[in-house]
Image (cartoon, rainbow, N blue to C red; front, side, top):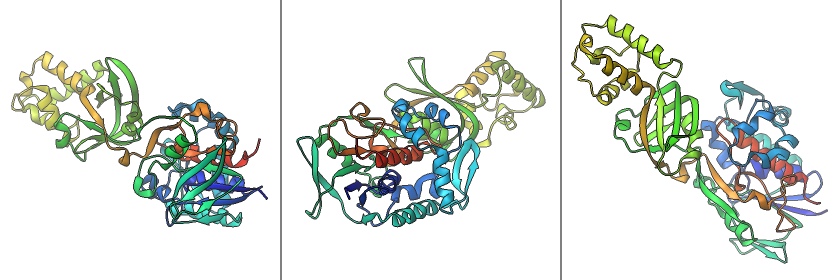
Length: 404
């Protein structure tokens, strides 16, 4: 029986091992003491394992090379993923945004199911072993060398080493070096699904404030890079939360972030709403007139940015000052300083150039007996279960297509 070595015990590596074990003798090598270390902390420990949208809608949620993933996602769909875990006695539930979680809210249930299947398929797992080198000669991988100096030979090798995010889980970018040594190109490594740092000091005053039903827009020279509606959070360094994380992959230099605090209202409707509130509080100070319109923690900041004296009587506020307030509430502009470090990112954007990988098999076009799966590839999705689905789908496709 031919031998397959899978390097990396994340979701892509585990699924590649399971899929390949149907026909081959599989050895899975992981540098950690247990499998799925990064998977364990995803979704705040709950593991958003996939998304229940129609698989055709996934491509709109994958900004990084979605077309390359066509074969992967249609070969092993989100329905296949859900059936896989439920067959292994992990009941699932669908939450807001079609996000799929284990009913137990425990990522350990997902990892244990994968481990159980690896055991069922007699996959040989080598723990606490870091691969340090891949020897390639005449376009064929000869063997891999571990940090202990051991040589491990096989007929085929699948690289599933992940990216650079959460390095404490073992994702330290080794796979990029392996791919480069084998002749592959690596595209634009950068953090994605990561909080955004903001230059303005007022964000520090808003630290901990969570906002729902707001709209975030990222601009560059008046061109819209990204726009999304949903939840966000202010931090001591800037902004975070679902819509911010998804927008982070579009951040480069000279980007402005703008928050519409009342996206459900037109400018005219918001102006009328403020007029009603001002009429109600006509004899009060301006600082006491916004309690029904904005969260308490936000009011002082909005008042400062409006340049209207907080002690000014509401009945003295001019039409222009009111119009400026409307503009401010619907365009709370901030200067993007940059992204948080890649170590804090949920995933890594960039990776092995997809033009050098066969999308129908995930085999290398450069090295005859090598395949790639998961985050190591130059593919990435938004938050919402899409990245774990990508890992599982690419792992499955790579494991099923060892030979031509």
